[in-house]
Image (cartoon, rainbow, N blue to C red; front, side):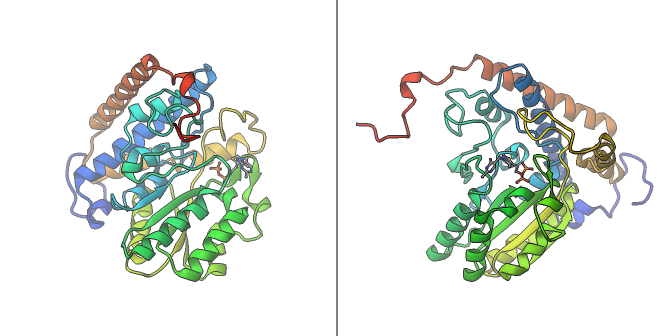
Length: 339
Ligand SMILES: Cc1ncc(C[n+]2csc(CCOP(=O)(O)OP(=O)(O)O)c2C)c(N)n1
């Protein structure tokens, strides 16, 4: 991109070329920052014994936020346990995310009954899943089948990691969606490892997107740490599915900067150098630089957005810590029919 003084707007900028306003681009930046800070804070809280488990999303933000912005409000979303950025982008507040993480009675996903990461907000069409890897994939295919039977033009998107592509659920889901040409986007966040197992030890093909061929659908692999590229590609395939073009497998190449979860501490499966090299792809400074070059963000504004995110997170945490835990006498609510 051309050398441009900060504050001077350039005609050519990727977000405008994609039809996004400057305000929307700034909102994307805000979400990236808020998601990173939330993930980091949840990991700290887990180390302090305040949350049961933290599932960091550092490095996955652009993939989740860019793709979520390509969805319509009535589209159906199946996030997975690593989806803090995605659920924030879909409209959950940081307070709700923290209430869920601290297992409070008012946590929207399960009222403190489930572990963190089983996101649910039916009004946002966010459908809960389990931590059992890949089980959300056939569920999403069921939603897409329902949309097709009802004659609705809603699209379903389902998120999962590269490890999930080695599971039977993945095969069953993509096979069925391919046969019936269902409006579903399979969104793989390939962070190269299933806990400590590298992709090359889980898969005989080089790229998760290569698997699409077996199901007669397009498979597209792209830089999932580039938020605008993720948005562009997801939008293209979502609109294709909406118009009856059938499913697609999208592979966002990402990198997980932090631990697999707070429960898996051993980092002996990858070198510090590898993590450092990948850090150069960090989606947040990359997008910040891009917005500065486009003249829509200054370093001072970026710092203010970061401070506001920290304050919002502090407030959410203070609120959630003071909020009640679920009443033990209600433990079986939603499990058995109440008389
Ligand atoms: C069916 C099943 N097997 C094993 C596990 C243990 N487990 C939890 S997360 C995980 C790795 C999944 O990796 P991937 O799908 O690449 O997603 P990531 O966590 O890297 O985002 C495993 C093996 C599980 N939860 N469910």
